[in-house]
Image 1: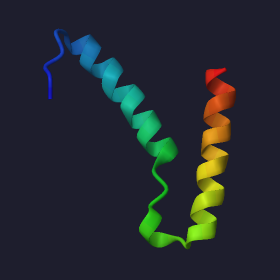
Image 2 (image 1 turned 90 degrees about the horizontal axis):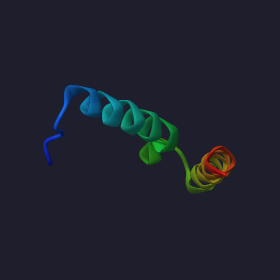
Image 3 (image 1 turned 45 degrees about the vertical axis):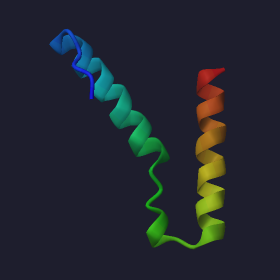
Image 4 (image 1 turned 90 degrees about the vertical axis):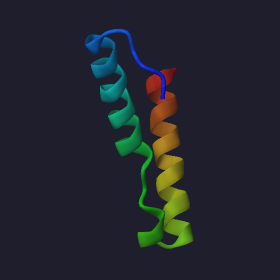
Length: 52
């Protein structure tokens, strides 16, 4: 892992990473395939609406 030059940069990176990880982490091993696919599609649609 590369070192970030400033603590502020690190905090910004970590906050964005945590948001994305929590948004897309679906805990695949706990749900069946169809439910996982539906949740994944919903997460991607939401992300596209935010990013657009």
